[in-house]
Amino acid sequence: MNIENKVVFITGANRGIGRALIEEALKRGAKRVYAATRQPFTHTDERVTQLTLDVTNTTQIRRAVENVESLDILINNAGVFVQDDLSARVALDENLAVNLFGTHAVSQAFLPLLARSRGAIVNVLSLAALASVPFSPAYSISKAAAFSLTQSLRALWAARGVKVHAVLAGPVDTDMSRSLDIPKASPEFVAQGIFEGLQNGEEEIFPDPTSQSVAEGWRNGIAKALERQFAAYAPQSTAQVA
Image 1 (cartoon, rainbow, N blue to C red):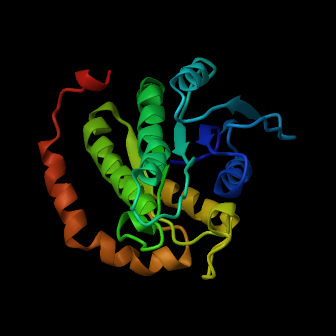
Image 2: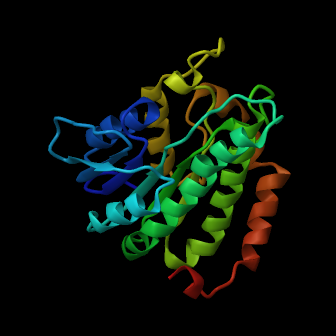
């Protein structure tokens, strides 16, 4: 998937990885970048169009779709990170609302446009989708669920010509993880890695040094082998996602 002359839609685009993705898409010659943010956001490049979008708000999702004429790449980057110990359900609900259900709602809403262009969805997840981090199990649960969603949509929507990618990033130096005293990759480095992985057709994109250290093991592991095997059971009819 070459980014040049493509139309890209990015959620959570006002800071961190989202902001870096805007800049990287522009560098790579994107025709139009829709920057979806909860708060007003401006950009000096005329190719950037800001749209107000809370991914948990169905009305705002519908309005966003109405303002997009065509779309090649949807990047579900919006996310929340709530530290917890699973002693109360509220943190789990908050993480799932954005990281899982928000990703599903936005993907489903833009599916007709992506099917028309035979485009791609990129879900920005985390290595926590593969193994839970003990200081935020609710976040890990939501990312694991979003990864399963990604694999499911990949199999179900292949017949529509829509490719679905998962970004399994390690720690990134953003507001979300600033309090963690661990090595982190820069958002700019991760954004470059995401587009490189997309361009190379990688179903799972490992965009930083920490995640790259496990990439080969994942790609040659039993979980990936099972996914490929189970994909054969995907229904050929796509009426349910029309």
